[in-house]
Every structure is written in C-alpha cells, then in structure tokens.
Image: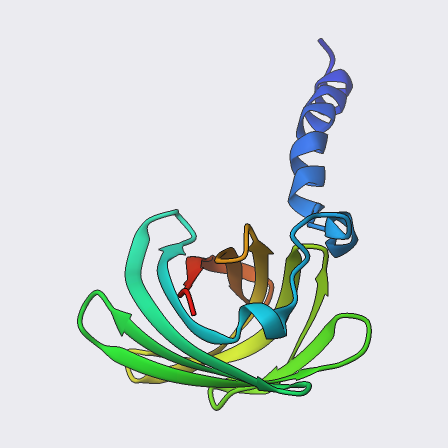
Length: 181
C-alpha cells in the first residue's frame, strides 16, 4: 500500500470522529417534543435536585443536592438555590430571570458574569452563561452550556458542559423533582 493511499484511508477513518466532535445539539430539534416546558410554570414552588460534577475523564469529583424555592411575578422569576455538597460545604445562588418574547429568557446571579441567555423549544431549554467559580482560593471564569429537558410535570433532567477557552473541563448532571403543591 502506498503512503498516499494510507493517508487517504486514515483521513476517511478519522472523518466521522472529527465530524462528530463538531456536531452539537440543535434547539429547534425539540420544538415538537412534549410536554412543552414553561419555565414560569415548572420553576414555581419548591424543587429538589440531586447532581454530580464529572471531570473531563468522567470521574465524579463532586456530588450535591439543591433545594430551590422559586417564584414568579408576571415575566420576572426568582430561583433561590441552596446547595449542599457531599463534603458538607454549602452555597447559595439566587437567579433573577426575565421572560422575553419567543421563549427567550435572560438571567443574572451574583456569581454569574454578565447576563445569562436562554431559550425554550418544546420540552427543552438551553441556557448559556459564564460563572465565577472559586477553586482553592482562586476564582475562574468558566462557560456553561446548560441543557434542561422536561420529562413530565414533576421531573426535569439537566446536563451542562463546563469549558474554559473552548476546552471542555467537565459535565454537570442534575435531576430536578418538583414537590407536590
């Protein structure tokens, strides 16, 4: 086999892998999925969540629970999150959300740099923001590409990819369960 032919075969074999690495979800692909996610309806009341953070090798490096107390007044929502981590440490984040036209949302929180932006389609919500993340006495600004999927009226699944300068640092996986009223 000639060297040129080997290069062509290697390139052909690598192409699906390279293309898969460039592929990403399309929010419009969820437009017909049910149940339809209405953030103001789901994030209203008390919600319990259980989550993990996996580093880029897939190792679970942090487990946590969250109790969220959520309220809406018109197009303005407040999601008050109380985190408890497996090492006993706690954290609080208060999101202030604004519902805009066409399923779009913006949000702020004290540890979010600038404004978060998101949009719903069908049962899905995509949320992008930069988080000021404290690690060992330093604060790093990391980007989150956050996807939520409404499973039924009580359960929503959440998967977020954390990156810095386009390099994937890890993933966050959460399961939300809305308490009965």
